[in-house]
Length: 461
Image (tube, rainbow, N blue to C red; front, side):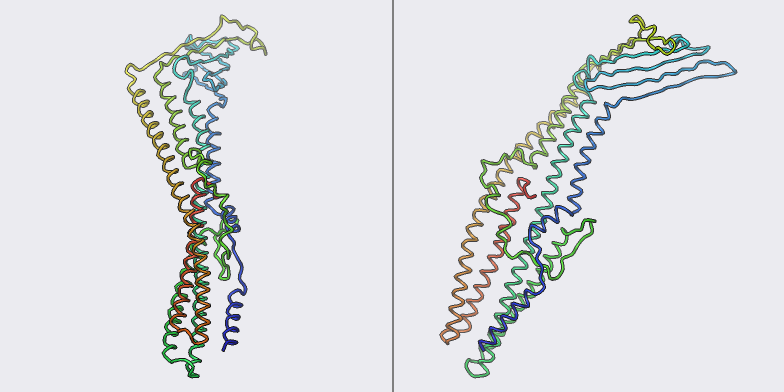
């Protein structure tokens, strides 16, 4: 009988490891970071932010323009107007202009009169009031630069979130697999014991009622095994959400693919940085996103303050009549076009209202930052405490597993020599399996807690 039991155990052990391939945690992590569509979307978010800066810098692009207008009626050339030029905006709000103007016609407005060869002009337009120190052009570029930073930070947040989901799914899969192995082990123990008790009962070496108890235990273990298989299949289906190829084609786990056997190598205690003094919570991506929003609002506030100033623009354009191919032959400082435009709303209600709104938004954003920093610190404290508690619980649970195994082996030995009962063996075995189940649960929970800790500071990748 003992030889049969030993052979059966060896056979089951061999069958359980045939043709299995492992998907370890690091390989899974690399696949998610390389092929997952959400990671690609995060990279596109950064590109969008960079293109926002390119678009904003377009406000400083030089601009060519040309305007031609004319009127002809009953063989009379009323007028023909032609004006082509180049405008160069600058960061400081000053615009440089240059161009060529040529007008003619019987009924031409005198102010549009030019020599037959036309007029060259070049000049500058300067804002002396609103827009002198800050304008929409500069505000657009500065805002775009902040948006670019937000896009980079948002990429970190997106990847961080998807990795937390992926890691949690992996350790749930790991937990389901390990529990299936324990349930299978318990089922094999119960099957071997049932066969042994049944043979002993047939030989008259044990009471027949023991076969009933052994059969009930076998059925119970079979039920637990079926439930564990169901949970393992579901965990694998969830994990499939994070498996993709380089062409963004979803993958599915093969039936013989299993997780890594040991969970302790995924993270190390030192890499978690569990000392709060070493972490600046205000520079974490979760808080930085609100900080960047505050930066945008400060740019908006500065622009709104500029709107309270009167509008005063001065333009000066020297004129020169070309002679031959020389456009500056008749240049003189006494030939010019000059203009001043000035305006200002009387009550400034629109401007004052807009500025007041922005100030309130800034106050809300500042309060939001303070709240998030405090929330992050409290989460950090809770997670740290949970992790240290989990490490202690794991150490205790591992000891319980070892001691319960010793009790089971001792009880089995006593049962074999007739000094114990099948009931006590079942109890010892049940305790041993339950302690193993609890240990696996704690390991998976520990890995999820470690992932949450790293997620808190965007260090999962």
